[in-house]
Image 1 (cartoon, one colour):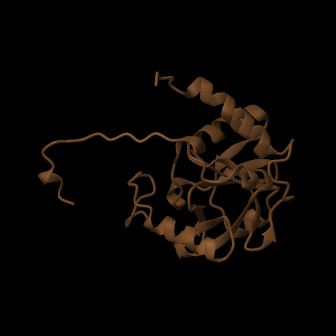
Image 2 (image 1 turned 120 degrees about the horizontal axis):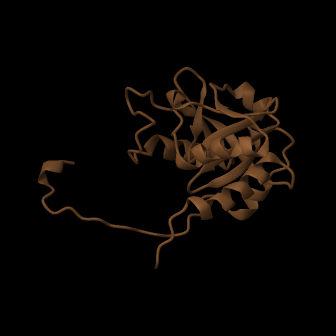
Length: 194
């Protein structure tokens, strides 16, 4: 808790394959619930800083589990969509891919940025936009992205179907972007010898 007492810096690396959502859940799509907890505002905990302070997110995830859902949707203090407990949120609406801006509480993550870059190459304009829950209910598709989560479609929010609820069906934008994301990892990644 006091960095001035750290005389010998140590570097610890733990490497494992993350599987935040099982493959079966990824294929069918996630069930989300809106958390009663709010994303802390930037003057409390700026979402652009990867501080590893996930207490609010962990509590939201526990709340989702208590309601029988796979994950939680976090809103900000204004009631706009910020993120899910472990990933960024995207909505395909009226032919455009939308995701909340960092100023609304979204972590400006690597996978999120990659999806924003890949979507136009698939003929889908993509941009940041403040979103409400209505935007998710009215979307053709909703999915989450994250370095650990990958790309995971959402099939319901608060017990209501989202989009067509087809999960990772062939031909969905989620499936096309997932394939493009996996292909880009070879190009964007840095190989290393184990």
